[in-house]
Image 1: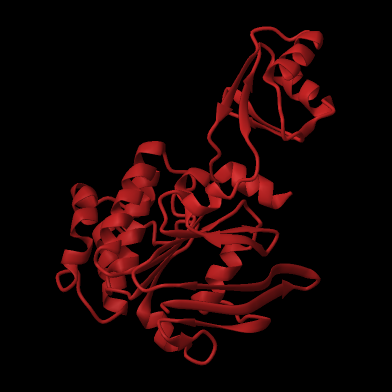
Image 2: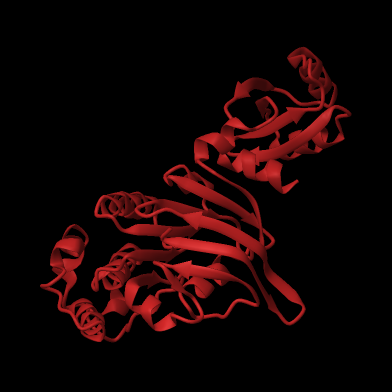
Length: 300
């Protein structure tokens, strides 16, 4: 395995950040750690990149133990933390040269690995890193994480605060990197990005809820979901929360996702109830579940 965690736990004083975490990441896999802020994603990343010592359990990265072999791991992995952490007063080219030098290599030696990413920021190579846009900063950080040709790449919430177009481009770059036999572990709070991974681990409050392919997790969803809409979204949610047959209701774009307790659900019954509540322009249609629905169900 490229990455293996066995019953990892970590506490900060009385706060348990992660509890009994176990999962494996296969060589060449794009594996996603999916969960909201505070779920424990960054703690796991810091343990795997040898920045934190686990309180309990063991973990290996590229065959090396995270405690005993920390020097070997630091030479074998690339790490892109959630916050932009490059030298903002150095130019794009100076940052890249600096990180290449630290790992005893050069930009030219591993240029083939970063070429399709670097070509997008090369026109700004003399611009200070602090003056780059959010998307360009992420591309520069990814180049710096790759410049020494790591076996495993850790990306901690790499697209947070980045515009939708740059997010899409970033994930396309990850797919191309995966074809170069680099194992990638990425964390994100964005549920739509989960579908782009080979496998995912859903995490909440420091505990793993489910590990599987995105498709398999969605297919396990136990209920039929309905897109319910009306003229007044706030009143619609309030009304549904009072409905005696309610199983769950969550806002989802211009609709709410509603599930019913009953096995034999009649749309006409719900429509009649909502009309009595004074709602108009009511629409009720069957919807396909997604990763967000699966996460909310598992988190219950």
